[in-house]
Image (tube, rainbow, N blue to C red; front, side, top):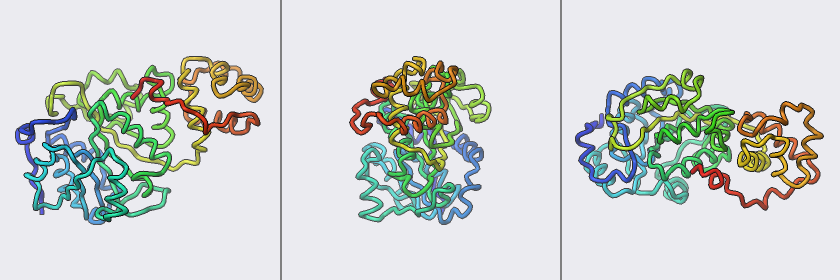
Length: 341
C-alpha cells in the first residue's frame, strides 16, 4: 500500500525542528532518487531493509518507501514534536517507528541484538550490502561529531557497518560536507577528509546553496554534478544550506592503529613541512624518517598536502621504527585540537 506524502505546508506546522533542516519538496526528492539510481544496487528491493535515523517530518521516508517498497522500513526518532507528527501521519502504514535515540550506541544493540525488531542481513565486505540501506539527517550543527563517529565506524567495521559495506545517504550542513570532501592542499583538508578518502567513496549528490561551490574542489564538483536547489525548499529556511552525501564504504587493509596515530599527530601540524612535523610522532622520529625517506621533495611536503596513500606509506614506516612510542598511551583528541567538530 502506498504511503501518503505530506506537503511542505503540512510539515511546516510542526512547531519545533530542533536545529535540524529538511528538504520538503517531493519533486526534488524524486530527482535525487533518479540521480542516485539505487535500483542498480538494490535489485531485489522486496528483500531490502532501510533504517532512517532522525527522519523528522518523514516526507522523504514516505517517498523512499513508495519508490522501493522494502520488506522493512524503520524510523528511529525521539524528538517529541517529530514523534507526534510521525504517529499522526503514518500510524497504520508500513513505516515502523522505533522510539530510540540514534545518538546512543545502546539504541542499535537493543533494537538489533536484544529486541531483534530490525535485523539487517550480514554480507561479506567485498561489495556493497544490497539488502540494507541507512538514511539519516544530521543537519543540526551540533551533530558534526556524531557524523565523524559514523565515518570512523566504517573504518572500524562496527556499529551498523558490521553488516558489511552499508551505503549511507546523509543530509548534513554544507560546511560539514565541504570539510569531508576537501582534497589535499585545500584549506579545509583535515583528519575528517582523510578518513572519508581512506574508507569510502563519497559523492556530493545535492546541495541547497549554489554559492557554496567555491568551498569544493573543482574536480569533485564536476564529477559529482550535484542537484542544486533553493534553500527556500527546506524548512526552516533560515540558516545555512544543507547537502546530501552518498557514502559508499569500501574494503581496506589499513593498519588502523598506526594509521590513526600518525594522521592524528601530523594533521595537527598540517602546514609544517613533513621533515619537522614527524618529530610529533615521538622523540627521534625526525632522524628516523629522514633516513628512511630518500626523496627530499616528499619531506618538504606539509601534511595538508598528503593523500591517504601517502599517509599509509608513513604509517608503514612508523610501524617498522624500533623505537616508536606506545601509541596506546595517547590522549590527543584530533577533532578538538583542530576545532573541527
